[in-house]
Length: 315
Image 1: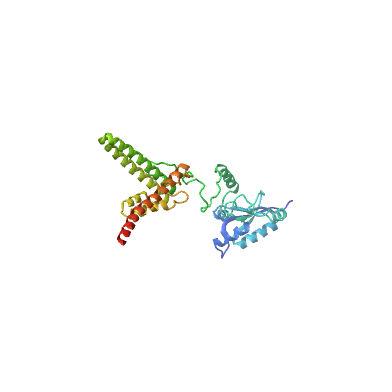
Image 2: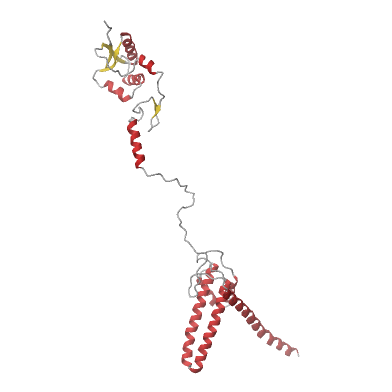
């Protein structure tokens, strides 16, 4: 006849001089379980903690659980079944093949391999499946961009290497040599237009007089336009051209417009003017020579009569 098998049962009663919190902590550590599962042992109904035990084994479990503070009892087990905690034999058999501990994929808690995390309570298999599903739906990550790196978008205005030449405009830029050449060309055209108007005036005085007015307005307007473009090349506002009307200061300002070089590269008024053509160079040098001769003529007209008067006075 086989020896009877026993089971350990528990109905939530505590040993004398013990507290509920202390017993729960001891059982959690003894069973290597979670506080939630230990709380279920104190819900009221009778709970079988261990089945299919021999008499000696049942006494060992009985002593350990009573020492932990749980008032358990030993009863004859008619039907052997699985238990809440493993037996010593099962522990000894599982020790050689015991797997290393695992870390929870969500909170990183280290624990023995289990389908549930004892720290955050997630079902590990469901959590991993959900993460894999989210990874498939998530768009491919864009590479991180440093806030100190230069912008990838082309936000600057594209400016050509050289600006477009427009004589009849107050926008754009022209250099010193082109300003001198254009001024010389304007003067020659003005002289030709005035000559024609004076020829017409010899035969038709009224018509010749009428022609003088638009010629003068046109020459003045074009001179203002090219003067503003020259100021833009220096980086100055075109309104400064009005300084030319100030006596004496206007003369000095006109000289500065011929002498001050323009800014290298583009400025707020646009890119620089294209290289000077041969015609511009010829007109500029012609205007320079004409200015030198005019200065010499004016100087001679002033000094020669003064010198002759000095000689006459000396005699």
